[in-house]
Image 1: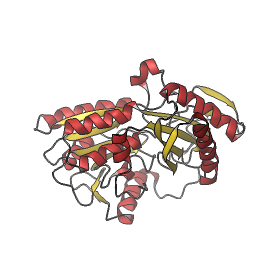
Image 2: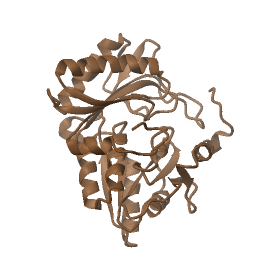
Image 3: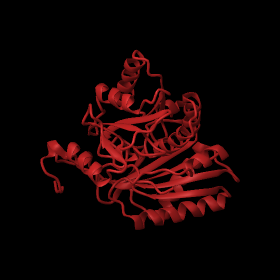
Length: 331
């Protein structure tokens, strides 16, 4: 294992500390919990937006705290769910008296702990609602969409929910709009090489140098197909077809597109992928309103990428493009 770190046991705390010290105008550490990051200037008179999840995926989850995004985030150990107490702290720190929306990736520990945390804070008078993000089309069929994992598409939910909350919308309206995003995101990715967890010191999975795995999860969960590496255009055409068929996108639909690196895949390769996806969209007469290319949801140093589409209504477009303040997002 080659990593530029100190004691692996301090990996999470040191990365959080570095994030806050690098961007003190955006992030702050919660006073009651050293695994909860909040906005440096707490908002008032709005619905709070909260998430939580394991470390090792920056910018997800913590990086998306900020104006027009999240109000607080609970942080677990690498690839591990935050505790119930950490989630309770995040919810309380985000609460302004108008309720809190919890945006949760569809992973067993995250969902279970957030459900318990919501029950606990509701007993204290804080109203909550939950959106469980399920955009990974490789992890379950459309008929069992509720079983799909939440991956890069959750960032679109963070952004839109954060933007509508800034307008002073009610918890019900924020929940409704976030649910609309969740229903209209589709993601499919491919892994090229594994990552190494700091404390484990060994790869999360094994794959031959000439192989890729379509649909592998961000924690190394099995995908739908392992095959020989092929040219980018052929691979992208395959992923694109699967996404379009699942999402039922058609000519004249408006979308936003995200081309995401899982960690190690460089921007040059991402732009080759983006070029081909945009060519396919043009051929399908689907209107791409905005393309996001970069590292948005990673898995340590895993090599690979994911493609996400969000079908845009006029309402979603407005909130997606609304002003925000986040080091990992360009409006």
